[in-house]
Image 1 (cartoon, one colour):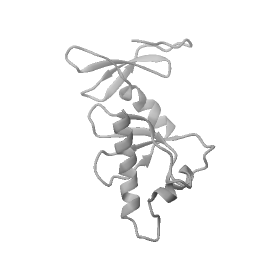
Image 2: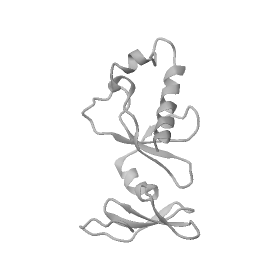
Image 3: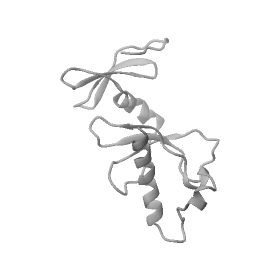
Image 4: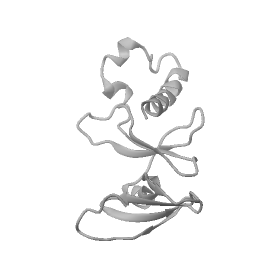
Length: 140
């Protein structure tokens, strides 16, 4: 997991280095000036089942440190730029990103998301809610 976070962090650092010399010098000296200058480390890094997207929470450069991290996604190709996704989008894709128990044919996955249980079809990229309760459901 730490390797994945490091790779995603480096993916953001490379485009900064490729910009014109007057924009930002990605050096230890500048990094020590604070995360508000170069952005926070991505957290909650998750791949989609089809490996087409990497979803994560992030505070980009220039964001006030008191703000909460926002959801982003990026394609797993060199030079891809992260794009901000809405909270509604994360609600719909969240069950597909969860870890859980796979069926023997690896097509279905039982996951927990926001306190409810879901059955996700990893091939079709769809999910079906199994529970909708006030109590938090865990360990499908």
